Amino acid sequence: MDNEQLKLENQLCFPLYATAKEVVKRYKPYLEEIGLTYTQYIAMMVLWEHKTINVKTLGEYLYLDSGTLTPLLKRLESAGLIERNRDSNDERNVIIKLTPEGAKLKESASEIPEKIKQCLPITEEEAMTLYRLLYKILKNK
Image 1 (cartoon, rainbow, N blue to C red):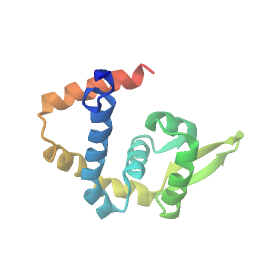
Image 2: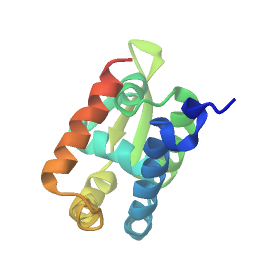
Image 3: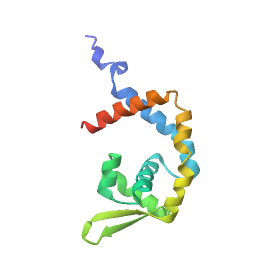
Image 4: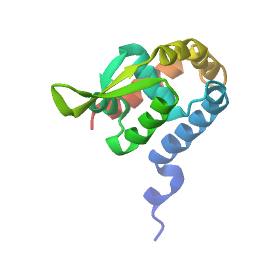
């Protein structure tokens, strides 16, 4: 029995997975220049926007759990880019704050989005369509 639905080429998940890996791979040389991994970079983008945030909220923004975030945040803290402190009102709540060094790194990262746009073979209109479709999936979980 030939089951068409189980062919890799007929799966939506595969091109999403493979494309995500390819896009992250294209970020790598630019991120190496500023000393970040891709996951650290997206965490820093949230911090550059919010300056201070709790771990739970950061995880919600990034679709990451605390088991993934904790080692990532420890490395960012060791690099002097963030500070982590327990909330004085609720010890279970960890607050992350951008350091001056972390804020300064934003300038070094500012050209990365444009560099990535240049290396992707899609138009601005196609990128916006893809963005809307991907967020439609993410928001409908």
